[in-house]
View 1 (cartoon, rainbow, N blue to C red):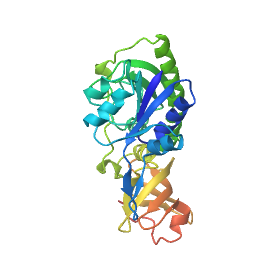
View 2: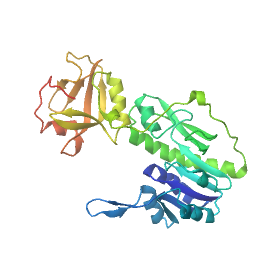
View 3: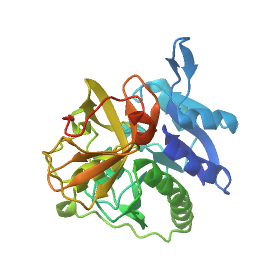
View 4: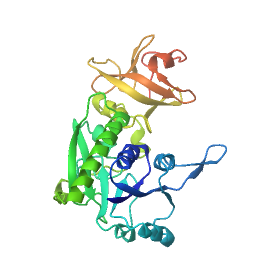
Length: 308
């Protein structure tokens, strides 16, 4: 099939590579236009834009999706299908361009976790499994008819980074299977049950702050969900301490939630509502990301000190 690919972040790259190596023809790759970055204000592509140029694909920078010249350029390609991965909400004028329609891949088992942050919310809620869904895009976000789905196990040590990597690899295979089925006319569309829908809104700054008065499991899941970005945080010695990896300790604490409950040469734990949470990997404001053992070398804290 003749395809136009649309995407921005790194998670879309394995899918673009899989399509590039398949028997489908990529007519163009749409991604946000390069933006000036850094002190030198040099133009920087999105992850997808950078890959498209490396693969010598027809890169189409997108500023406004409502721009008529942009829409005319897409129409001139005469695509059979748009494949969309973590891009933007497409206006009706663009959705009407491809002859077959537009396929999106979503990192949850729809209708669960509709929205911008399905991976993070699955981890926040302590899910043991999640999945990926290919579906036909409609005007309302993440509501279109389902094409194919695949379940993915969430391991105890998974964080947002590792689970995203799993999604990217499995998503590439699922997209190819979806396109092959569409080409052969072998896919049966399945409507979503809106009564079963749950929301996965964008992660806000407020959601990143740790509340030590809740259980160690809830805090541990928050750390997993927000690692490696943007990072769950607390305050320590007047500085922001981002926490990227933790371990639930099966030990009670005699300290109040939010106090240092264990302090050794290479270890530190914080008291929670139901026990203790050992802190393993951190980024203290003004320093680099490091193991807690290394961070403790330059810290002057005492057991019982308040955190938060």
